[in-house]
Amino acid sequence: MSDMAERLAAVQARIAEACGRVGRDTEEVQLLAAAKKRTPEEVDEAAGAGVMTVGENRVQEAREKIPLCSGRLEWHMIGHLQSNKVREAVRLFSMIHSVDSAKLLAAIDSACGATGKTMPVCLEVNVSGESSKFGLVPGDVPALLEMSSGLMNVDVVGLMTMPPFTPDPEGARPYFRKLREFRDKWRDATGMMLGDLSIGMSNDFEVAVEEGATWIRLGTLLFGDRDR
Image (cartoon, rainbow, N blue to C red; front, top):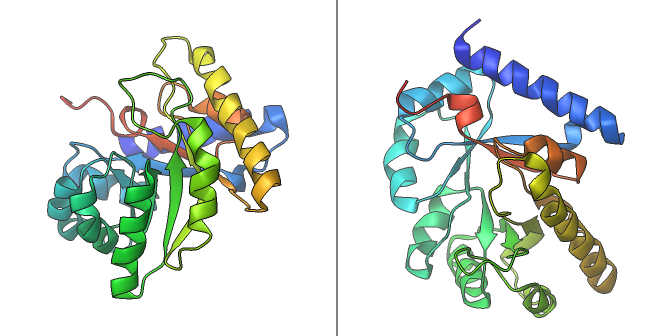
């Protein structure tokens, strides 16, 4: 078994344990390999081990990398997306996890309309209130959900957040839980499913799973240190 396959198996075991602690089915949790600054060879190694979905933070990097990687992979945008990169993002990605404004949502809808594509998206919510982080103020989300109901080419399928980094994974729990509580509140108010919660990274993914994550974004834990 390769190092990548061993790391993936270890992650899957930890996901199963976290699911077991809260009575969830492991099939509810999807793993996304965060490939920022990873080489095509590393991505293909992950694909060979069984990874199906890859996340990129930058459109430019994805544009260069995707043609060099396995064609069976699905690619998601997980970083901040600028409006002037939307047209290309719509071409490259199957899902966008980081929609943080009405302007961006409208631009994605327009770009998809021009290509006959429907894009599933998550709204990024700045639950922590940190000025250094992107994301919608929670109070602005209901209006954006209402706006999205009038758009034909985007499907708001859930929410995403980035908690403040803390060495203790438990430090992320209040932020993941708050996002889930917001989701439940907004789902009740709008009737939208909002089934996806894109939360959890290498340091805190088990806590995220316990709090309802459906997408976890893992980089170092899968690929190892970049200088390996």
